[in-house]
Length: 454
Image 1: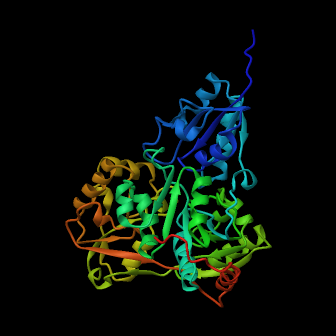
Image 2: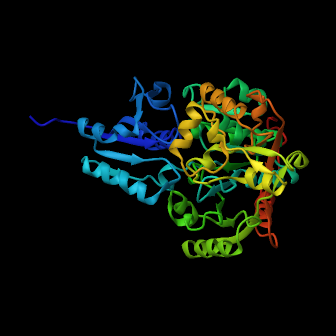
Image 3: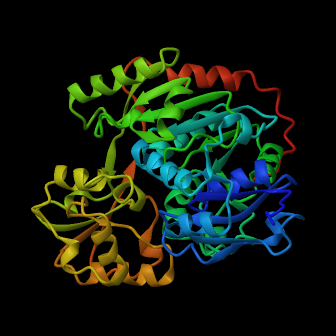
């Protein structure tokens, strides 16, 4: 006798971010669907957990298992899965279609959920910052935007793309206004890279898992919301102004990755970033591609200056550069701004971290062979953080340049001098984005003055 089912069986492919958001927005309360599993990719050590019942809702009293993506096809076949939903970011288009082909061959439909299904209305003005790839410089732009809001005497809450790698129930709604808040939440290095610079500016940052509640709380606290996107994903919050960055150090990527191309096509403003370090030919090539993909957008050019807090300490020394992790790993960059800044400051040579890499760090280098003579700041767990410290301690560097935005020296003990790199954003030519942002701020209703402070 044929099996009788009343609910459509669904698997959501993800990386502890958009996958959970898509579930919350589309499937959590849908009695016609049954999400039997999430699959995990990109981020270490997030498989073999469960999406907790407290977040999954009444239809899932036992929660939902999270399994390794390698188990997708057997799972589809053994469980007669009807639909596979792809829900993570910074993936080549070809890779997405390979995943689609695997799902189709296993008998399932393949789905990509779009903005209309997944964006949340905020009730206050929203400026969103996205990018065509990881590591283009979204956060410096968001910080630049927050400074303009603050200079106008208004408040902005920053909502950050999710990075919930720990206790998901505990991380449902997170609010960070101090370094102590980060410590209390046991934030990973990747989380600290995104949150610490905002906190240093006096910004309040929201993140977590339940973005409907996150958006509601942020809107209640601030005059407007700044969406600080992750990877190359499009926003979870419906923007009034959408800024998308493109990278002339990776020309051609602007329309080669998912969902970065979609973000590019929905942008109001496209910023060709890093024009102070890219070849002019590639700057124009990326600008032309942006105009072709989105003729309605305003294309402008930005500089991404990087400064060292003690450049003299680098001159003539052998340097180990610790770069932002996601930019160097799945972002595909051989090196980042820290290497460029150290070279410009006169470093005599660069230590090769492969020679001292241990355990998780050695595995990272094996998994991403494109990485140049830099060390990605991997610290998703205490064990990985300890491996990072051992790799640094074992290097033959005279000095360490931290180009990760977080202060790693607060988390691990470094046995040699440390120089930190900082990133900024500037419009290169006659300001175009600044007037548009100021006009949006000027339309805000008068402040009531009774909002909570950080």
